[in-house]
Image (cartoon, rainbow, N blue to C red; front, top):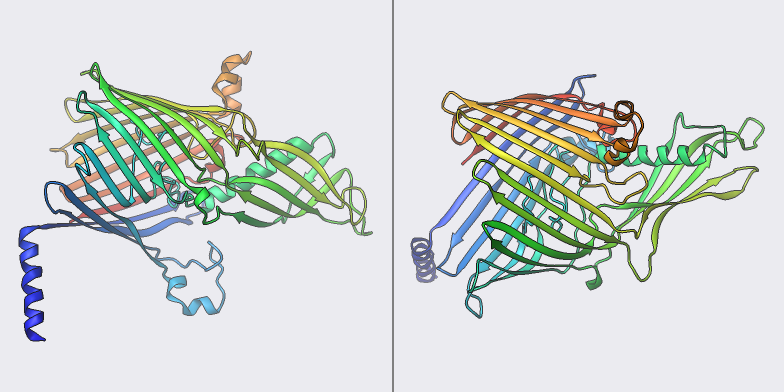
Length: 493
């Protein structure tokens, strides 16, 4: 037995010498407080441990373990400060901790034939050339666990094959995922979804009743996630090339959209003192809603060009939503119990929240690094991550983003200013007879100022403030109560 252990130890030692493994990691502490009431909006420590090995000229492997620690109580069924007595005895409720397998895959180059690369496993496959807002980057679901970490994605299990053309700089990429994973949401997005439902309800029912009240409204939701079936796959193919110094690509993806859509609202209204229901000024008591996921088909294209004096990029996606054969629309079928007389249930609206009408998302941007440590990034985006369609409460909106940075003291100190301007509908703004009046009533703005100190290359300390304001109907307007100050510490090893 001792001889066997000695042999195994020798083999492992020799393998370690022949094929060295690169081990890296990171640790981030992030804390944010509300400026309005000092609430703790976000408080977690997260990080990763990454293992990489280049086994030989053809074979490469990577595994990455992620972890998150929330040092504030989170209940099993709630995301607020209400816990059951039993939960006080559970460490994952009082001080919740999360471990995940972020990535685990291998890449084999020249697989079967020359210039054919194969990757298989849980991996991040990024498509598109834009910065942060990428309408063609759809192979991995969004990670909205941090409301302000725009563009974060969750790696998924996939088989990824890329053939590089021998006659030109370019190739063909094909990706298959056996299951379409869904996005991770947060409480802010859930509240935004509810606000949009109520806004849509009030707007559609204003002609039927004189008023809708909801002083102590109870919500009950159900989410129908995609079934674990081979039919719920994701498939993507992309043709890419470099022509005249410009990176170009065209792609096609079919997937289950990672963000759910509201299908039905079932509303209970409160009775009057005599047990009857009001038909004019109703008071809502409870709303039950159902969320569903659906398949979509997306054609995308992107480009990037280094013009020497700046880098220019752009991309666009053409989306065909809905199961084209069986689902013509996802509708807000709004039912209300007791409209007119006790015990009745009437459908009072059948408004389309998502039709199979084709819609286009696009982005255009540029960035430039200047002498003296300056950097600037400007971009225009039509459509945010969770926006879709040309009509309804979730339709595409318009955004202008500008970020300016300056590094001083041998780049140890960085000042960054970010501004995001959100317009409900840019086309409607230009069509309006009073442009300034439309913008004042249909826009939102976000401003962020941060200072980052880097005493060593592996250590970053950042403090800053985020201010948000906006009108109802805009995406930023739903976040206007999220003004905050923050502090972030990041260590890499």
